[in-house]
Length: 63
Image (cartoon, rainbow, N blue to C red; front, top):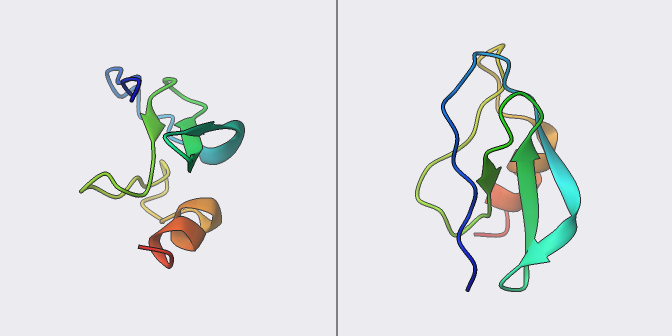
């Protein structure tokens, strides 16, 4: 499986689903730094507001 992109946080976090899948899972990306996340990762992305975005929450519900 390809690697996820991981970049240093710029405190501009805004996580959204992308049109791409990775390993059969929807790929989400941060619009602030370009880091990526899929629901099999052991951590949970949050936006710059400290809130878990709706797109992330939907994926967490499928874990």
